[in-house]
Image (cartoon, rainbow, N blue to C red):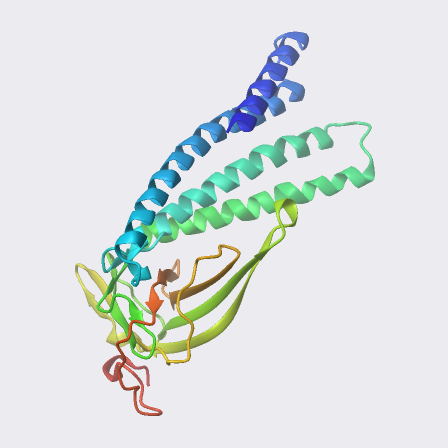
Length: 298
């Protein structure tokens, strides 16, 4: 936070000096450091607020770990209740923040290059960055349209947690009527998420350890004036791996993904769900017999 704040104030000071030298005209030497400085100052405040919240949540999680040492699904705040909210709205906000930040840096730089009479041909490569910025901006707009159309769907679990050797079941509730064009797809995935490197060389990859897909006929979704309800039921084989986030660089994540083609912006949402070895098991479904027969696509 201190580094961001110091850098931001330094750039704002530089912009102020350049403004005086330029005869109080908003030239590029004033605008660019001014924008970057303002973003860094705002970023320092956001970082401080985030850090405080993370410290508080970490302390609360430590208390739950001590209270429920044998029930790791109760450690996480997001799994305290059987209702898991999708992050469609917050995802759109984060996409907008990234788009604004990226374009605030790339657009002025590209403008300076284009208006430099002594520019070299190689410097034109910088125009790639504003093009990427436009793509990110479009992604933010599309995510916002999806949020406005469907709101924040939520998953109401009937099994908390999902049991290895048993079932994960529940209902996805959407506060809007979802008019399907074709059959929808529900997928439950077990992923190993590995992060390598640090800084600019940091990268994260995901490997599917197990996956099962169900197709639900479009006429079988439960749709009413109050919205849409999507049934969820998956059998989890006993050889699967439980959710494990003890090492943030090598995690096991279970994810429920729903996709459906609809007129206009397509419906899509996902939830990270808790799946553990609870000691409770259930007989698997008969080979070849689909779960939720009444919802199964023909």
